[in-house]
Image 1 (cartoon, rainbow, N blue to C red):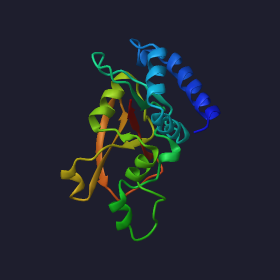
Image 2 (cartoon, rainbow, N blue to C red):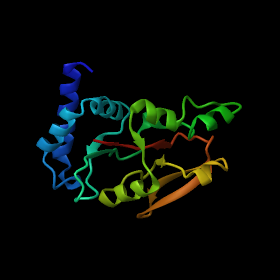
Image 3 (cartoon, rainbow, N blue to C red):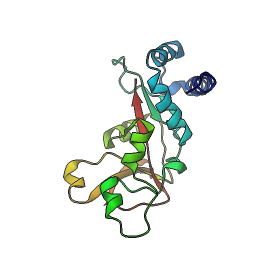
Length: 181
């Protein structure tokens, strides 16, 4: 990333951080900024999270931890990340109507990590999202080995977890990621 793009990304992250202090009331931007400068390779992943609609922001779920974690905080699962099947195996198993990509491949391209079901639930306890869309989450091998994958959404005041064939894809189902710094 060139310097102008780095500066632009840092400024955007700072504005979002300051506008959403309820997500990280115990942190100061200076501490986050310092960690980002110490880990410049993470800036590209944050830029990719932003470019694909994730609206990354720092969320503190464990106030005892010194780890800074950015999560996708968009209100709905980002549109540029929708209509993908779960992984490469699922993509290869489709005979027709192939999606453009798989969630797991996109997560690797971004350089972040797919949320687990528990992380999805924990994030929902901070603020609510996915009122209309849903998000694939990391699927346990016991489910994936049988051809399935899981996803979550927020309806009727609670988080729901569902299953589907890993090869399925829908225009309202995307994915959310996190980046640990």
